[in-house]
Image 1 (cartoon, rainbow, N blue to C red):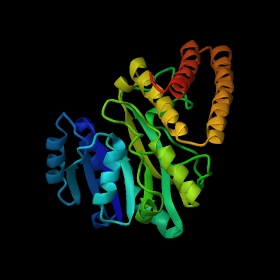
Image 2 (cartoon, rainbow, N blue to C red; image 1 turned 90 degrees about the horizontal axis):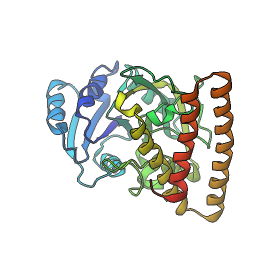
Image 3 (cartoon, helix red, strand yellow; image 1 turned 180 degrees about the vertical axis):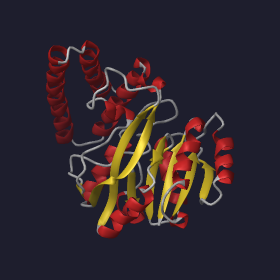
Image 4 (cartoon, rainbow, N blue to C red; image 1 turned 30 degrees about the vertical axis):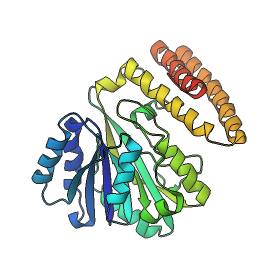
Length: 302
């Protein structure tokens, strides 16, 4: 029923927990397969992958190498190699809750006309949540939670990369992931999911949000360091630059206008954190966060 695509690059230390979470699913293991797509890792990803395949032998797990560098290449390879009609994308540093697969299958059984679905991505801080963290910034760590009500996704929102499922037929209708976007090795681009769902919505497809499809995304201390965050956030802006430069002028104008609106909201949050919460680090970081994105959007580089 479900093909789980895990595109991975140099995260062998997270991989076993990821696969183990599928061994702990409360459904029949014959209902899904797991594809580990190794995107030219230089660590022990191949060794660990083969170890987990042997260790969790009751699971249908396959390992393969995608030589073209980039997350989008890895995901597209997963689409081609998968054997089921539901294709789910999952991050290598995330773990699924025990009813994950059951909730995915149930969603499409209850919404047969839906072409895609997604759920919650919660955070697992491995060394504790930083004092400056806020829900407005934690999206860069993977946080995605739009509430406890099941609904059709509003067109301004879309499922995120560690928790998104598509019907296979949708890729024939709207195409695969844009390989000019998405992380490429150590180059922290993004935007491939946003661009994909822009095509999905233009096609008129129904996308369902089910809050019972829940996974946890690991946040090690290294990802909360300022240099890592800066590179990641600028990469978000650069990806937006690539995406909007391929768009019509009206879309570009709208995106630049919205960036101005977001600056207004950022300054309001700055005032809130500084004068109401007396949290200077959080106040400063929310402004730096916005500046890094704007820099990437306007300049197209770091």
